[in-house]
Figure 1 (cartoon, rainbow, N blue to C red):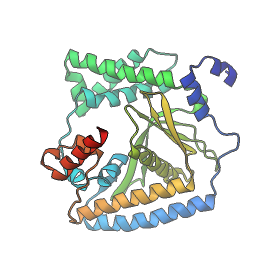
Figure 2: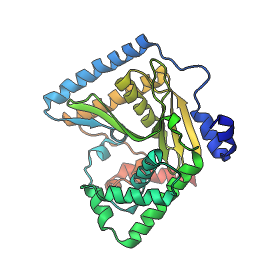
Figure 3: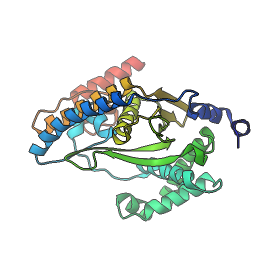
Figure 4: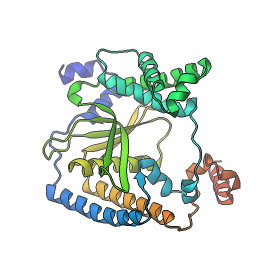
Length: 313
């Protein structure tokens, strides 16, 4: 199907998304020597941090969430709260699994069908989420099904049909290096395209509900860094897609983008290593104070929240 025929069947939001995903007329090609030098610089600094973690006889897994946490309030980062699955915490995982099924499903299934299949498959897994899904009450199952279906419907209303020529991959895992005391890793919600020779064609998308937060783009830049370390070819575009409003916030990947991600990642790893080495954690009031389990005993956080409330009034 050609672009004109495809576009005639899309709603305005899908048309905007398709325009974002189309490759530019001029190929995006990074200088190989420049990217090689960038990776070498990052690897040198990374090896220094790896040596410090090796001396501590421990390991670190660096994810986008871990970086956001350690670069925020270090006391919250160190707090080990037991995670429990519930309907609100399971909605995103179930919806993302349904989108993953959609990218490989032949035909056009109903969103609720994808959600039911997602719940069934995740419920079969021998882990805590599987236990929760396989034993939850019917009322909870209905709430979860409705909320996850809403997200999948919004996805299908916001994206054009993901043709195989787009090379769509949902929940794509990536890690670097393969092994070691420090490993960087993540799982992007949706990727489209792939690197060919030195041309950057890949688009990395994070699906979001609610509003935009400053750390969202930082987390996407972390994925761009991971992709560059893994393949030697940066993605051409990263984007947060906010399903509730049907809007994408894109950013073209540049050497400056990668440099920002490199500095932030090394800074975050460095702080985590310092805390492992015994440095006292720093308390930093921020937006996460609203749901922090330490908030009731944190004067700094309580004061910050009160000030934010006054500013909004």
